Image (cartoon, rainbow over all chains, first blue to last red; front, top):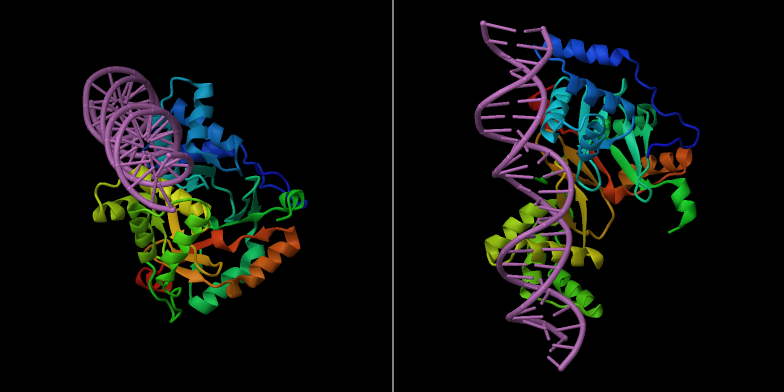
Length: 160
Length: 160
DNA sequence: TTTTGTGCAAAAGTTTTGCAGATAT
DNA sequence: ATATCTGCAAAACTTTTGCACAAAA
């Protein structure tokens, strides 16, 4: 998942400061920084820029600490989402998908055949946003936008 | 769900011929037309143009015939999808969403606040399709596209 | 009459909840 | 010290599967 396409770069990798920021954000709200949360955030950071299902996170976290039950993981994800450091949506199979919040709002491109995803910078979508705003006064939320279809590789492999 | 917006009409209501077409399509493949399938298709037609979750369909079908178990309903949905009269995707909460195939491929507009959906005719999205095709050689599938954000009514009610 | 579909019951898979005890601050 | 978090176990929920019986063609 999430490879390069057409030479466009993936999102910049998050720095270690991220952990510090999250810890501070938690403390600011009277919440606690625990070993479990550290591991969960770590796992999330490893797949920054990608989407990870809840079940996959459970698996990855338990690979590091088999004692951690799913409930702790899901609850931590809720917490991280509540302070804005993670967001979740739902994948094609309906399972939850989480990812670390990037610095910039962006949409996604998803290939229906191979499942690869890419990020679309907002600049590429200004026309869409402007158009829907003009014709329908609708404010588009790019961060929830996933455009699906067929990527060049798959189209070439099996031209429909 | 699915109200009018800015004077744009909802999709045309499906005619009774639809049922006849589906029956014929089933028979053409050696499949059978049963009372259960009739009811399920009926329920689907009632919400043509909207999206209905699997669970909601189970509920609605059982309101008409409490004897029908979920398995029959889901299997019928599979069958209807396999012959191309229904398609499914996944909603924001991750549950399956089904809808009767419209005559024309179209995208959806979804308000994150009130949950209302509208159809976007392909004509409004030609720029998006052309742009992604040009810059990334990506073939957009409009029927799976849902653009979410805030509708004019909600924006007015609570300007963020 | 033969293939397909139904109904039931149980399973599968992901995510949630309740609560006693442990831990971070 | 005390409010928050963890771990466990069990539940919630949607959807799937296996199999004997029923029904459509």
